[in-house]
Every structure is written in C-alpha cells, then in structure tokens.
Image (cartoon, rainbow, N blue to C red; front, side, top):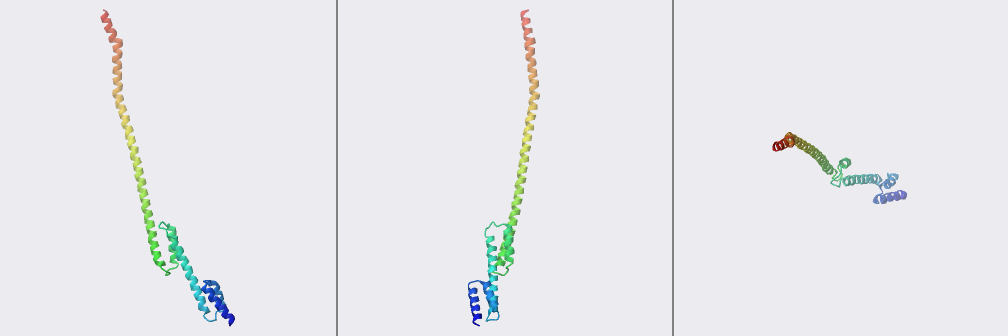
Length: 178
C-alpha cells in the first residue's frame, strides 16, 4: 500500500509539473488505487487542452499579419475548425473566412484593373501609331503637292532662262548690231 501511495504521490507531482505522460504512466500502474483512473482522465484532458491551445495559437499567429496569403488563411481556418468549440475558434473561423473572401475579391479587382490598364495602354499605343501614320501620310501628300507645283515651275523658269540666254539676248545683240 505504501508503494502504491508513493506511486500515486509521484503521479500527482508529475501532474502538477505538467508532465502528463509520465503522470499517466504512474497512474496506470495503480489504476485501481484511489482516484487514479480520474487522474488519468484529467491528464488526458490537460494534454488535449494543451494541444488545442497550441493549434489555436499557431493558427492565429500564422495570420496575424494583415497581408497573410490565401494559403495561410486556409491553413488557419482548417486548423481552427479542427478545434471547434475551443475558446473563440469558431468566431476566428468566421473572421478568417471573411478575410479570405475579401482577399479573393481584392485579387479579382486588382486583376480587372490590370486588364483595364493593359487595354488602355494598348489603345494608347494604337492611337499613337495611327497619329504617326497620319502625320507621315500628310507629309507625303505635302511633298507630292509641292512636287506638282514646284517641278513645273522650275522647268518653266529653266526654259525662260535658257531661252533668254540662248535666244533673246543673242537675238537682241544681233538686232542691235544690225
């Protein structure tokens, strides 16, 4: 009996020190002594509470930044759903699902805005190309118009000069000489 009492007391000390697995081993050794069976249950409950606390804290810290990724949000939602009923895990799930929906909404909006900007840029480049083409076309038309007027004018002037120097001036000198 004193051996069982020593094991029981050792198990209680281990339980107080949060060394639950070791405490369970002690209590299982004397399962029929005092409240050893309920102490095992208490240890298992405390182990489960610690596990849930760790899951909860990890899930919450994973998404503590406002710019958490959709993957992190999904992982945290899944983890918190696995401990439904613990603390405010269910409230956190709802909060994170709302953040996830907002994340996807913002992503869609950003993608749509990027498409709009890309289309506006494409149209701007098309307009610029069309304006350059029109400018070049106008320049060509101006050159053609100038050529249509200028070439005949130069030919006429050349003809007048040639006639003046080859025909009129020599003819005038000839008539003066006679």
